[in-house]
Image (cartoon, rainbow, N blue to C red):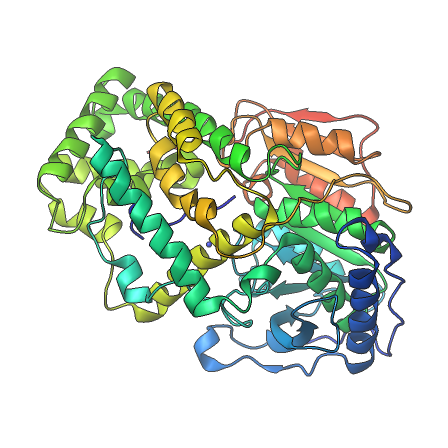
Amino acid sequence: MRRTAALGTAGALVAGTLFAGAIAAPTAGADSRSGGPSEARGVKIAAERAAKKGIDWADCPADWGLAKPIQCGFVTVPLDYARPNGKQISIAVDRIGNTGTAAERQGALIYNPGGPGGSGLRFPARVTSKHPLWVNTAKAYDFVGFDPRGVGRSTPISCVDPQEFVKAPKLDPVPDSEADKRAQRKLAAEYADGCAERSGWMLPHMTTPNTARDLDVVRAALGEKKLNFLGVSYGTYLGAVYATLFPGHVRRMVVDSVVNPSRDKIWYQANLDQDVAFQMRWNDWKAWVAKNDATFHIGDTPEKVEAQWLKLRATAKQNPIGGVVGPAELIGFFQGAPYYDSSWVPVAQTWSKYLAGDTQALVDAAGPDMSDTAGNIRAENGNAVYTAVECADAKWPTSWKKWDRDNTRLHRDNPFLTWSNAWMNLPCATWPSKQHTPVDVKTGKGLPPVLIVQAERDAATPYEGAVELHKRLKGSRLIVEKDAGSHGVTGVTNPCVNQRVDAYLLTGAVDSADVTCAPHATPKP
C-alpha cells in the first residue's frame, strides 16, 4: 500500500508488434463471485468489444515523458460493468515490444506499482534504461503499463484543488487535545465532501473489482488470451482479486509485497497493522543510523537517534522549518526510510546536513514545491484515488469512538505513523458514496501457480499478508527475504530472489517448496 500526503497529515512512484489478429476473449463467468452475473456479462461484452477493436498505438504525447520507442494508447471500459453499454471511461496504456526474437516472445507483461493511485506508465522505461534486473524478462515480454481508472492519464478523479492539497505546513498529526482531534475530523469530512463534489459520478465505481475487470479488458485489447501480471504493494491485492474473478485467464502472476487479502483486513485493520510494522522498520533504521554515527553524527545509539527525532519534531512544531516544514511534513519525508532501503542514506544525509546547519536541504526535501504544478496535480490525484478505492472497497467504522480508541491505543507503542495514518483514512468514516463488501479471495478453476515475494520486515505490507494470500491461492509459492524490509522486493538486487522471478516468468517454473532467501546487502553510507 502506498502512503502519501493527506489532509492534515504529511505534505507532499517501441519497436515490436503485438500478436496479430483478433483473439476471442475467454468467458468471464467466474466474475459472478463478486458483483453478480450482470457484471460478469458486462465484462465479457467489454472484453469482446476491446479484442475486436484493439489499441491504436502511437508515439506518446510529449508531456507524458515517455520517449520512443515506447508507444501509448487508450482502452475504453464501462464506468459500471452492470451497464456495459452505458457511460464509458478511458484507460491509458503504454508498451514496448520484447527485445528478443519473435520466437522468444511470450506475450505482454502488465504491471501495477501499487497505491491505490499509482501510475504504471513508467514500466516500459525499464527496457529503454536497460534495467539489469529486467533484461532477461524483457527478451520474452512486451512490457505494458497502465493508469488504473481514476489515475493520471486515464479518466482521472480529484478531491481538492492540487495547489491547496500540497500547501504547508499542515496540522501536526499527533493531537495534543480534543480540539486538535476535532480539527482533524473536520478536515477529513471536508475532504470526503470534496471528493463527492469534484468526482461524485465516479466514486461508486472506484473499486478494486472494477479495476480488475478493467485489467481483463486491457488484456483482451492487447490480443492476449491470458494475463501475465506483475503487481507490487496494492498491485498484489489487484492481482489477488483478478485471480479470484478470472482464474482461468491467468498465465503467469508475480505478486510482490503483499496486502493481506482477508476481508477482515480490507482496509481498516490493514492500516492499523501497517502502523505496527512501520514502527518496527523505523526502529531498524534508527539502529542503522546509530551504527553509522561516524558518518551522520546524529546519535550513536538508537535511543539518541530517537531523541534527536523528537527534538526535530518539537522544533518544527514550534516554528516550522523554512516556514513550511512542520511535524506533518517531517513524517511525509522521513517515512521514506522505513518504506525503502534506498531512502536510508538520503534521509540520514539530509538530517545530518540539517544538524550541521544546512536548513535548506531539509526544506527542499520535505517541503512542497508550489511551482511544480504538474507534480502537485499527480500528488493530489494519487491521494484521491487512494482514498476513493479504499473507501469504496469495504465498509469502514463510522463511530469516532472506535477510531479514537484504536488509534490512541496503538499510538502508545507505535507513535511514528499511527495518527498520521488515521487522519489519512478518516474520510472513509463519512464517505458519501456506496461502500462494498470485499471480494473473498480464493483459488478458482484453472488458476496456475502464483509466485509470491515478500520481505520479512516490510513496513507498508506486513509479512502476514503474504502468508494469508499463500494459504488462499492453492499451488502458489512463497519466497521470503529474511531479515529484510524494503518494500518492493523484485526491485532490489538479491540473486536468490531475482533468479527465481526470472525463471518463473520465462518458464513457469517454481520451486518444489517455499524458499527463504538471505537479505540483500544493507545500504552503505
